[in-house]
Length: 179
Image 1: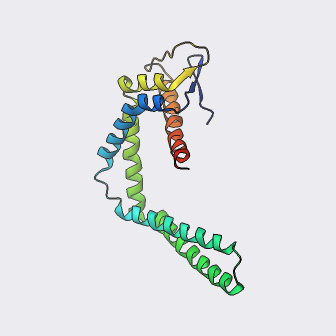
Image 2 (image 1 turned 90 degrees about the horizontal axis):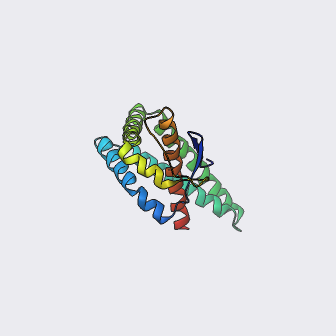
């Protein structure tokens, strides 16, 4: 992700993700979240999410045991921990298999992803919403204004790339805030 985009001969790049940029992006973020909720609210993902949570808990437990192995402990304790790690590996693999091969889970995940994609497409094709959003998050090196005509060929690819990269930056900044 280089955050540079060429459209109609002009190169643009994403502005740094600062509060003023986020503020201008909020209408798009809010509408996307509302649409995602609206399109996915009737999909019961409880069993899938339970399995995902179980997998995360097992992986956390394994990581904690692996960290214990680095400490100065007796050989008996080391063998006991190794046995627990081995058991956890089996449980982790079993949970992954359940998530990957259970037809019901696969269908629910596929439906959820397709409904989320529809919400995204609806946002990207809403020119009244997306045009000011794109203009607020991009800058051109030439100092010229952002001139975008979303009715032109290639506009959807341009908007999609900018949109994707912008939303990929948000989780990275959340991580920075947490640490």
